[in-house]
Length: 67
Image 1 (tube, helix red, strand yellow):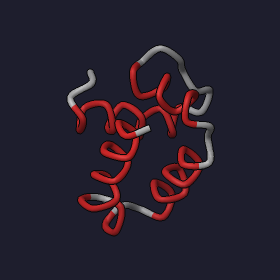
Image 2 (cartoon, one colour):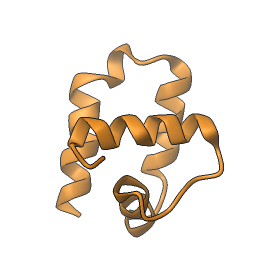
Image 3 (cartoon, helix red, strand yellow):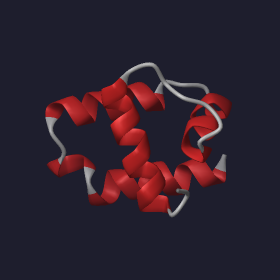
Image 4 (cartoon, one colour):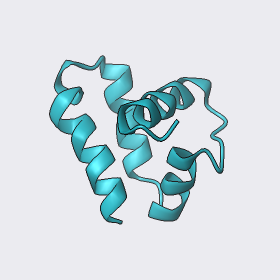
């Protein structure tokens, strides 16, 4: 999905290298998700059970303007 490429690529370019090892691991976890599931998370249509990953999802939403 092109939209996912834009959001995830933006994070990679701007934040990934300076993110904590834990946030990098959370980002990798998100990348392993099927596109429809990740898309649902980023649009706020679904939730994830891990509160730390949810923080990253909220950041990605804010970064992309999808609040």
